[in-house]
Every structure is written in C-alpha cells, then in structure tokens.
Length: 405
Image 1 (cartoon, rainbow, N blue to C red):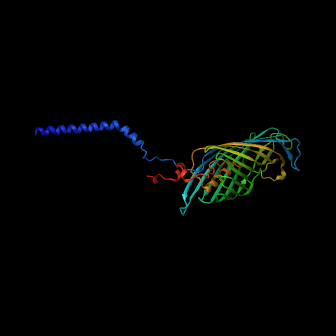
Image 2 (tube, rainbow, N blue to C red):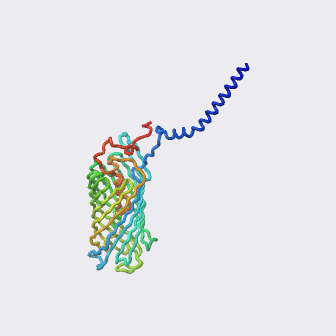
Image 3 (cartoon, helix red, strand yellow):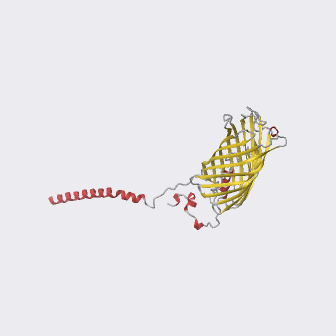
C-alpha cells in the first residue's frame, strides 16, 4: 500500500511539472507563433476597392491676351486709340460625392449614378482706356453634377451651377446668376456617339438659352473629331501614351455689373455699368500626361471677339442697341494649366460608354466659362494589349474576395 501511495504522489508531481513547463514553453514561444500566423500568406487580405469612377482633381489655369485695339461698331461712339487687355486666373476642385452601381433588370449590364461637385474660383483683370484704370473681377461658382448611365449606350447629364461675380471696388454689389446644362448622350459604338441637350449660359457675354447638338467620330482613347454646336469643336490626336495634340475652336466670355467710379468717355461717375465680353478662340493644345496623377497643357492660337459697355440699372439681358460695343482686333492668346488627380478609381478599360461619361464630366458644368479639365482617366489606346498581359490591378474591382476562398 505504501508503495502504491508513493507512486501516486510521484505521478501527481510529474503531471504538475509537465503542465508547468508546458505553460512556460507557450509563454516563451507565443510571440513567435503570433508573428508566424500574422504573416501567413493564406490569411485573407482585405483590399480596398475604389468607390468612384471619377478621381478627385485640382485644376489650375491661366489665360491672357496682349493689348488689342478696340474697333467701334457703326452706331457706337468712336474712340480712337482705345485699347483692351485681358488676363484670367482660374483654380477649381472637381470631386465625386456619391457613386452607386447596380445590376440591370436582366442582369446583363451594370447601371450607375454619380453625383459630383465642382468648386471654381476665377479672377479676371481688364485693362482698358475706357475704364481709366485696371478693373479686377472675381467669380465663384459651386456646381452640382449628376450623371446616370444605363451601363450600355445611354447616359444622362445634368449640371446646376450657381455663381456670383463682383469687382474689387464694389464687392457689396454681387451679381448672382445661374448656369445649367442638360445632355443626353448616345454611345452608338466605340467610334461614334452623339449628344442632344440645352444650356443656360453667359459664355457669350449675356444670358442665353441655347441648344446643344453634337457628335464624336473616332475613339476617345485614339484619334477623334468632336463637335458640340455652340460649345466647342476639336480634332484630338494622341502621340504615344503620354502626349496629346488637338486643334480646336471654342467660345469664352462673361458678364458683369459694377458701379463706375470715374468720368471717362461715355461712362459717367456713380452709374451702374453692365460689361459684356466674348471671344472665339482658334488654336492648338499640347497636353502631357506625366502619370495617372498629374497632367499639364499649353495652348495658343488666335482670338477675336467684342467687349461692350452700357450704363443701366437693368439686368444684363437688356437689348443690344443700348450698349456701346467694340470689336477686338484679331490677335494671339496664351493658355496653360496644371491638373492634379488624387486616389484611385474603378477600372474602365474598354468601357466606351463610361469614357463618354468621363468626357461629359470634364467638358460641362465646370464653371460657366467653357473650362475643360481634361480626360486623363481615359487610357491611351493600346492595340497590343492581350488577355495574357492582364495584371491584378486591371481587374481587382471586378473580383470579390469570396470568390477566392
């Protein structure tokens, strides 16, 4: 009996010692085990899928014309030796607010709706002997843009852009106005699309409601000719993957109201002056896309147009006969700018319907001065692209982690 009790005591001590050393070993090796599990290549890695098709972007541009001679209209007051000079600086932010995608009823297409905002600030400086000293005008706009795509050939675009404008002397007198654009886009195929719509704009120097009729022939990721009636016309050609060249014609303009502080020419001191300006630009643009996050452009050519003044307390829509209007002698212009893009976006390679959506966003609704923020997200056409060359980044937003595990 004594021997049996001794054996039981020895066995208990052995079990206790085994448990004790087992705990010690676990405490010693636990950090290494945790490190190994943490670096297990089989463990799921939650990749962040981009939410939007459009990247947030910051754009900065400068535009200017040298001294121009003013040529009076037949019924305007002749002012010999009068000159006119104009410069414009512009900065803006274009950013997606909300993007929603869903399967169509027949589950054959991915429909989408995107809500985008564009905040734009413009500073314009006019030097003219009519004004006696330079005038600086500022315009601020906050646009809200909605784009619906049925995932196939149809897209609808609506932009509402309220803006205010004033000069440095009479900032208390702000002119608040509203510009709007509505467009239906039909992507017939990768080489042809057309657009129908209307716009309420001041780009011709006065408030106008105009139709939009346009078409594009050629691929947006290659050579294409784009004409949007009363808005722009351009021939666009890529040079390799990073350089782009275009020949274009487009109008720019604005309208202001301000209180005159000088007696000069026909403008009397203390009166309210309505100012209209409009130019038609014809020139060439070179664009360099350094990466998916940065691009820059340089544009130059010739412009012609008019500038008009009137003393009136009425709105800018008063009839043309009450204005003193002067043609601008044709001359050169210079325009350059920088575009910065942030974050990542959903992949759209080969989705020509979405290419048209991006083109709508960059062409319309970015202030009411016909500013184009560029199509850097549309990839250059690469005929050598094959399925075997696809990388994970090209298709990651089309995959679901549950399909792998």
